[in-house]
Image (cartoon, rainbow, N blue to C red; front, side):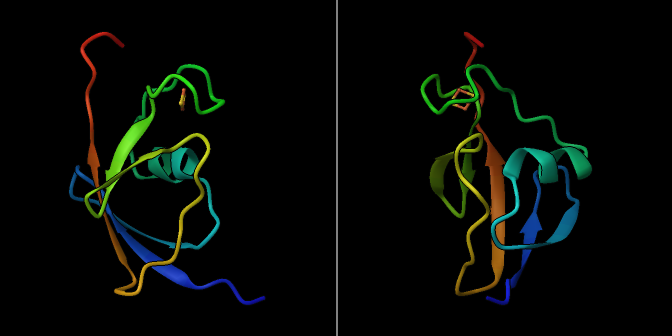
Length: 81
Ligand code: FES
């Protein structure tokens, strides 16, 4: 299966071109974004980010193709983490 390319727009103004299925946390690090993590199993919510307005848990979600081929990321901050 051919993996499709996706443009990611990060909150720091950087832009990445990645293939679907890549890891959110690794791609964020390459772009200079540190996504906070805790459990890395999907249960704590520390790694939640908004992708095109939808909240995902970055540690258990791979980068998914979008029809408009572009994903805009917003970071969520939890003062308790
Ligand atoms: S690090 Fe806990 S849900 Fe992702």
